Length: 225
Image (cartoon, rainbow, N blue to C red; front, side):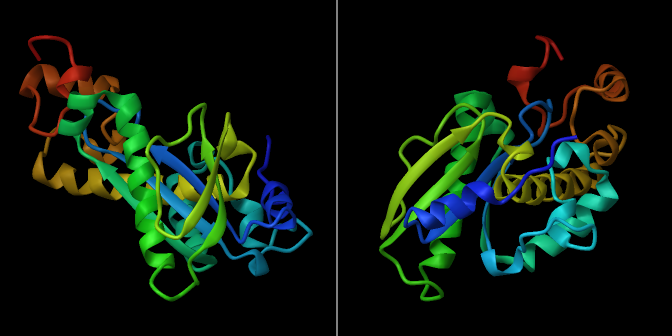
């Protein structure tokens, strides 16, 4: 199993970047609910050179490879070791309107903008040279944060390679799972708390018996559902 490391972030600091951001999304595949992205800036002083089992960052990796219980624990650890984090949501209606690719990029833009608003509040001075690592093949279009000199890098399988992206993936996944657990209470019988909106056999059966809810992505469903 590949574990992410902090080497790319350290390289950025050596090149003069003052902030390094990791960004990832959760919820591209489900047929219900929003797509969610997170962006975070890890505190470099909390990360040592040695990857020992008792260090929080040694357990951080792609959120899809971690159990739900472990994700919930790590999400709290990550948030306690970041300079700031931000979450962006794009609703199921927006997904239907602009497609999932554009919705994912929009969610990441909102996450970075939210992060920027936190870091620009006096906590950290503006006019910083900022490197943003993004999971996937695409950078975020139309991304501007006041006072930041941005440099984006899209990294395929970045959540398995770069610690900041892995941390963001966990924040995004836990945030979205919490939304789906809430929707489970609003729309009982679909099993949202279990499958989180993915198109499982349980979910397909519920759709057949109960029909679609207002939070289903119509563009992901077969016509007539």
